[in-house]
Amino acid sequence: MGGTVALIVAAGRGRRFGGDLPKQYHDLAGRMVLRHTLAAFATNPQINAVRAVIHPDDRQLYDIAATGLPVLDPVDGGASRQDSVRFGLESLEALAPDRVLIHDAARPFVDAGTISRVIAALGEQDAVLPVVPVADTLKRGQDGLVIDTVSRDGLFRAQTPQGFRFERILAAHRATAGQELTDDAAVAERAGMRVALVAGAEDNVKITTAADLERARRLFEGAGEIRTGSGYDVHRFSEGDGTWLCGIKVPHEFGLLGHSDADVGLHALTDALLGAIAAGDIGHHFPPSDPRWKGAPSHLFLAHAATLIAARGGRIVNVDVTLICERPKVGPHRPAMTTRLAEILGIDQGRISVKATTTEELGFTGRREGIAAQATASVWLPR
Ligand code: MG
Image (cartoon, rainbow, N blue to C red; front, side, top):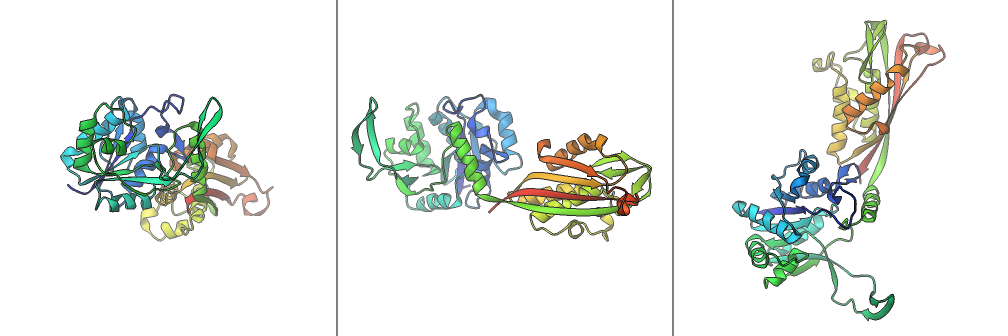
């Protein structure tokens, strides 16, 4: 096939991280660390294929992390990082790529600039290492005392993805199997390859400890912004035996009149989500003049808004719906409504609020002519 393949090394158990769950499967801003990493390569037009090397016990977790991403099936790793990479490279031999980028799953902030620089340098070089300079003064210590100040001239911190001509690094790994080298540039050096340096990125950090993950969460939050939207809707009572409210059919002596199922709560919430990402309103996406939406269940509208947010790399932070009516009584149905909204939006129930109020028998809701709903939604969007 030629081209460039990304090999993501995700087989580690993370002994320095603690706990039972390997660090690459922890949550980082609503997605697993590994999903961020896979997506960075799977959505990069310079990368032709992506394969992860995983621990066989983690297959179910991996499948969650990779859901919907265009990646090759994973392969099982070995006892050491070096074995895992070699197994991954062996599995790619049949594809015969020209270049391979080998990347740690625990570096979810890899940027397109670093990937580009590594690939560009592979035009001339067989092995390329992205690095960042050492900024701090280096000391050698012993028994709690400084014994030397070490010159940082010519010292760099090694990052990934490390890029290689595929045939050369596969041969190097075969030749050095069992030597417990800590990165693939070291494998290349040991095999006598010249390794070229290119600029990495300070944000391309490796998550090794629980404190790293906390710092990564702050970094991630800082890479985006919170947007807020509001929505409002009214539907009139008509003949019927119940009203759809927040995805639940609530028994009532009337129904609600509308082109779709007239779920006033879902309509207000859909508008709030669309508002948060400045994507128009529900009537723009689902015109009442279109016969396709006659009698349509309104969860389709809400799910569409959630899909638009996901397509922009965003996520829903929280939603808050207020239903305004004298009847039907909303309270007994609130838990079911919250559960249903969590299902439709794919977020935790703790991020969903459903409230109800009356207008003290004033106005159209007070006269029981219809139901009003208002909603607010907050959405995190990448900058
Ligand atoms: Mg409506």
